[in-house]
Image 1 (cartoon, helix red, strand yellow):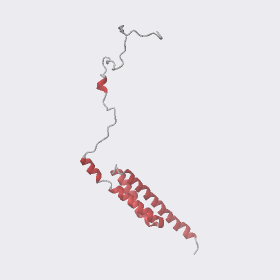
Image 2: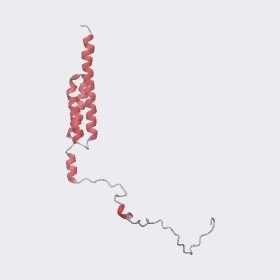
Image 3: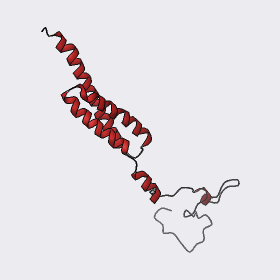
Image 4: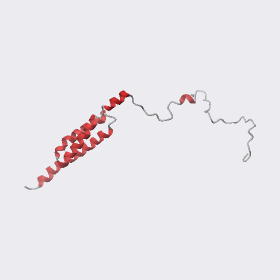
Length: 136
């Protein structure tokens, strides 16, 4: 009852043991055999051959970034940066497929290449639309 002290010397048959899982029902697997994954996250450790193979990759991404920056810089001053910017976009798309671990470099190469192309198209529009209207 409420507020009464329990008599621990008495043997109760109705005692629930919550410290271990119940026995499996007929046809069910044992609890221990159903645990298949570790309970903590275990990081992947690369082997030496994997590290040396990864160290050689990244050339397309770096080339895309360099061409993108050069194309953007040249496209600020004129339409001549369009070729480098287009090369940067093509290299970035190729690097996206082949180089999984160089995600940031090819992404910056893609964006700088696209920005250079936009500036080059802007120069073409300025030259063809604005300057041809001026009588001269």
